Image 1 (cartoon, rainbow, N blue to C red):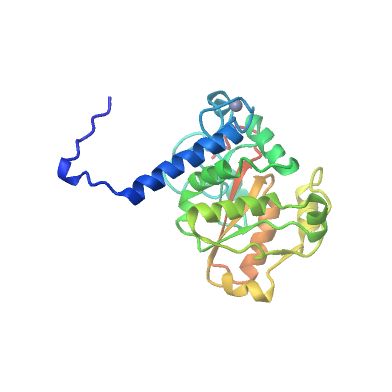
Image 2 (cartoon, rainbow, N blue to C red):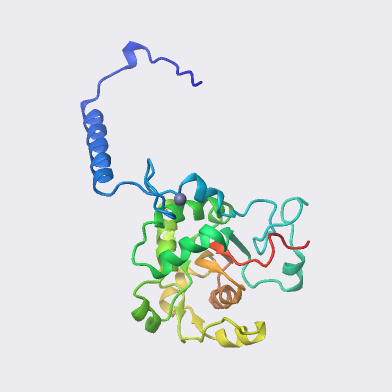
Length: 268
Ligand SMILES: [Zn+2]
C-alpha cells in the first residue's frame, strides 16, 4: 500500500498552463496508442505500454549481471570484489579498457538484434538505449565522447544504415553525451570474420580503421565509449581501440547489446 502525504489546500495552486500541457500530453499518448497500439517488441503480443517487451520475453533474455570481469564484461562464477579480472583477460588483455553488454547473445535478445539489423523497423531503439544506459552506467560516468563501430561506406550502401550508429545516437540522446558518428573511419572493406582463426581475424582487420585529422580533437586526451550491437570475439573492438589510442585517446571503453559467450560464466 502506498501512503501519500496530502498537500495542504494553500499549496494546491491551479496552474492552467501545466494542466493544459498535461491534458495535451494524455490526448497525444492516447491518440498514438489508437494509431499504433503498444505491442511487445519481441513477440508482438499486445501490451499496455510502448517501448518494452512482455513479461514472458523478458524472462527469456539472459541479462548479464554482476559479478563481472572488469575488462571483458563477462560474468564471473563468484564475487571476488570490485575490479576482478578473468583468466581470459589476463591471458589476452584487450586493447580497449572495459567492455559491458546488456545480455548474452542468445534467445529473445538474439532474435531482437537480428530483427533490428536486417528488418526495416527500428522500433526497439528506445528500449535498447535504456538497456545500454543501464548496463554501461559505470562507463558512461567516465565517458566524454560516444562513437559507433563504423561500417564501410560500400556496405552502408547495401545495408542503408549502420545499426551501431543508431544505438550510439540513442545512447547519446539518453545520456546527453557528445555523439561523434564519424569519429572512426573504416578505410577498408574486410571479409567476414566468421570461421577465421584469431590471428587471421587480426590480419583481416589490420589497418582497417583510422581517425581522420578532423576528428582528432574529439579523441586526444578523451575517454571514448564505442558502441556496437554484438561483441563476438572483441577483434573489431580491439582494432578500433588501437586506432583511437594512436590518435591519443586517454581511455577506450565499449558497450554492446549482447556478447557472444560459449558458457554462461568464464573462469577466474
Ligand atoms: Zn513478448
